[in-house]
Length: 314
Ligand code: UDP
Image 1 (cartoon, protein in one colour):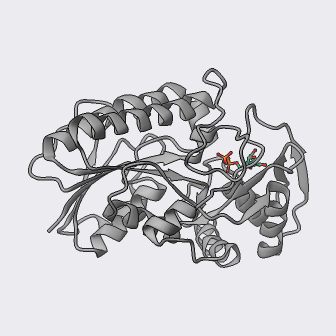
Image 2 (image 1 turned 180 degrees about the horizontal axis):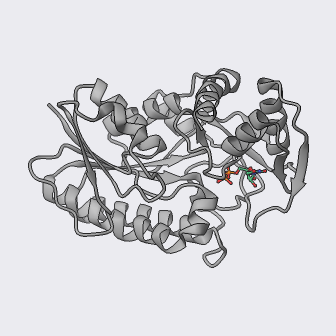
């Protein structure tokens, strides 16, 4: 039986990974400091499962796990612009110190290591769409720099552990992903728009809404993570849905989908908000034989069910 540590395991992606690898027959150690989740609701259904163990812990501290480990999936991080602006130092620490600790554990246990990196390593990209070979355009001292640079450092130290210690490492550059279990208040475009639409509140489009993003449904992303883990690719691989949309059109899609009467208002654009973002997934298609299958319409419909349920509970 494979034994897998998932850091950030109670988070949005982490909790889906817990479910996925439990279903694959792994024994899961889920580690999370619950910095933004006051409770363990996202993994509550797994508590008591014989192959699941939750440890409340901050991975920036010295990390020790008893017994063997086959895989470490390092997903601990603040992940929404609002959160990493609220917790800039924790964001820097988890990407740098946390990744160092997790890699140290991988070395100790001779485990495979997968880093959750991000499209933010490309910053405000001057190349569009973004292939893995593009080194990015990041301002280290801008507000978003705390996340971008922490993840860039995380990639650098991951490659160094691979090259110097021979650790089998993988780097997933994850583009915007959405689905059930996103926090309603995480401040990202999708939760904001959906909650606003469902409550009949004004939809807050930042800037003029011409900036673009490309949204991937969580189930597709998890399949990509699994395929990357099982591959022998050590250099970064983009994982995301290449279907690009402007933020304004995305807001309109959510209004249509919810049948909301909310109107759109335009608010100031946050500093350093990337103007475009779209993954070039040629590498993932070629090496992993992976590409997203869930259309935005279908993914948004599934996500809406979750948001409706959560809002009815509050
Ligand atoms: N955005 C917006 N209204 C909101 C929240 C976000 O217009 O209420 C915009 C944001 O400025 C960005 C895009 O939507 O251009 C995606 O933002 P998100 O926070 O989801 O993640 P990002 O892709 O910027 O990391």
